[in-house]
Length: 331
Image 1 (cartoon, one colour):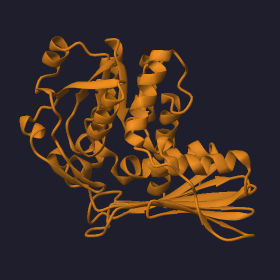
Image 2 (image 1 turned 180 degrees about the vertical axis):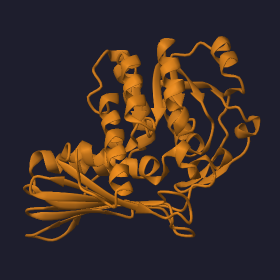
Image 3 (image 1 turned 135 degrees about the vertical axis):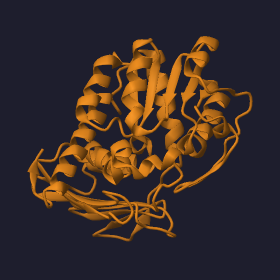
Image 4 (image 1 turned 30 degrees about the horizontal axis):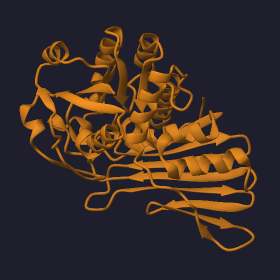
């Protein structure tokens, strides 16, 4: 069983990573043995996220406030990086150069140039936590597209709406120089899955704003393909409202809708029906995937870092469009 260590013990770890590690240990695959955070109180306090509450408890976990002490004290195979975005490149490259298998939270980095440095250091040992690539609801949609079950896609829209993530250390999410704003932090989920589902767009555009909360607190993007466009909306201005993540995709012979966690197919002929999808923890599945292929020696085909880097290039292009009044730019 691989031994894992965490760098960072904030909200995403408590709300998503810890439950995944508990399941993976029960499966005999990965054991989380240590975690490091510069704040000792991080190991005892809970947190409320847009996706629900996060629990800091994890039986038997060795905790550290000094990274070098953790690395010297523990025999680790796998490092899970969950620090603020502006630190992703620094820690990922360092851990890769020391020979660890590394998963780093999304977004990959704040610039495409930083992503390229991470790819150069990866040697097949890096994956970025673009978790929607492991979500059954999105993989169901991908299969419909690839199989041509309802013909070609004619258009679609993706949404990810949230209150402002003010739970972060030193409120770092609200500082675009550290988080990239909603385009890089929240919107990146849909930008990445759109590329995963439909490939690379030919041209893109974006309008963004919401300065009363932070620069780039909302973004509405358009990705143009041959004969169709895909839209995505990301918002951090939904205060006092529940988190929303959904999609609507139109095919030649049906519409497919994710709403409230349920996928419904509306065929043009016949009755609507709920898709038969087996629930799965996408955070657990992404950790399972990277550790499985590392041990088997297989190539990372589902979520390679080179693809995550292209999602950052897309985010950079959309930000450039927003900064130029929503101009349409080639991609």
